[in-house]
Length: 120
Image (tube, rainbow, N blue to C red; front, top):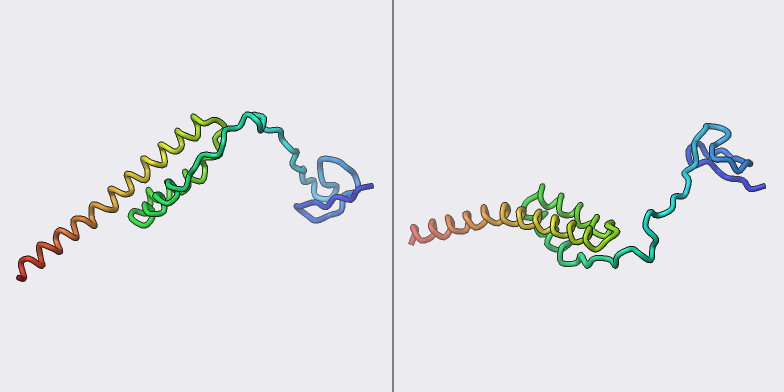
């Protein structure tokens, strides 16, 4: 007999059933992948996108967070087309965050230079 321990209550279940004899917890069933592993696309290179999304996070918080979450999900796509579509979405969020974060900084620098030139 095999003793299985319930992850929910910790009880020892001697039977090989799908539920815990003590608390009724239903044990998860291993699912097969919908696409065989040999048909899965190669991992998409995300190094540059990851760095850009971190910079975007520093410049503008909300688009940076969205970009980071989307970068983490790029390789979840089963086909190369899905991965490229997700990468385009990340690039759009990074571009928006970079523009929204860099424009106020540039305006500040221009105003600072103008203020310095007025003092001279």
